[in-house]
Length: 119
Image (cartoon, rainbow, N blue to C red):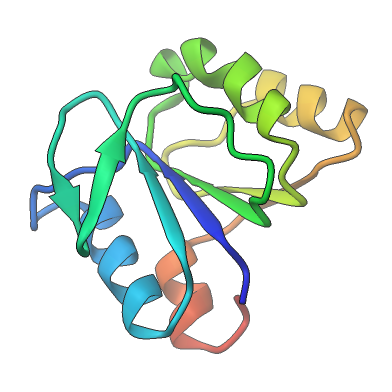
């Protein structure tokens, strides 16, 4: 199963990052939550960027482009196979950096991908 890192994880049930974390876990995907506030989502602690995970298949973004710069190095060091830019997170600069590093950049909705078995 594709281990997924959620950038912008939130324990707020009204947030899409919260919904995705729970859906991924229900479908059997292992997750890593990274966010600004401590807490748990889908039974998994929300971490900060101190630990670089090197076993990530997919990063799914829930941080707007205006707040993504602090995550650039972290994402690139993680070396995922792909990064999903969910609606509202599209960022040409980060997309270019990912592609230069050989990382697939996908503009899509993780929830829709999961619901339609395209994840």
